[in-house]
Length: 320
Image (cartoon, rainbow, N blue to C red):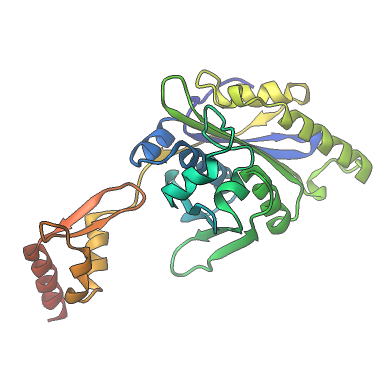
């Protein structure tokens, strides 16, 4: 396996046929750093969002879809909501809603990871009780797929294992990593392996041998170190080869990922046209402008009364 792709912002599918597993290696660098840098997140919240973006990219890469894959985590803890989504063309975005004071209080007596800012058990400490939901939207004429599972486990990786058990009912394992490097920039990575259906395995393998090969795959995945998962000088193919070289892994075409929000002036115009003019007063700032902000990319769209009049005039013209 030779390195043919850049080290960052991609999802690389691979397969280890001799072990009966397929997998994904996700590496996020500049795209992740750009997403996080727009917000004043505490490090622990940024680290949790970084892991969620990497997990979402790994889950999206395991599906065939044309549209938008969304991963949403809701909890009753200091971090009440995390949403990430990815288009089938590889455009990523994400945001987190949290109570800053509650986050600080929850971590006051915790020993935090120096790179990610996360405590040893981030799910119960930061997210609390809640659920993880995935949605695939492929347009108005297609059925929307959705899977929802409870948050179970100490880490986001644990929750992902539970997700796979409930949704796919195939053996799967996930390893996540996130952190701020010595240069101050954020990186994240995900490694997943999933057992191939029995029909796709070598026919002569019995259940005991399949289980043994699955255990071998788990040991090899578990040997991945956080440092190499986040190493910007280490290509994804090289990482996969290091882990599974004795079994001759095969990599396929990587999916390029990028930071790109889908908000636009036109989208906001359409939203405002659906709201009564008198209901917009709560959105006015000290200048008297109606301000609509995008939670994903932190872009603000300002409308003075003339701009609102123009929207109303356009509606009247269309109605005529």
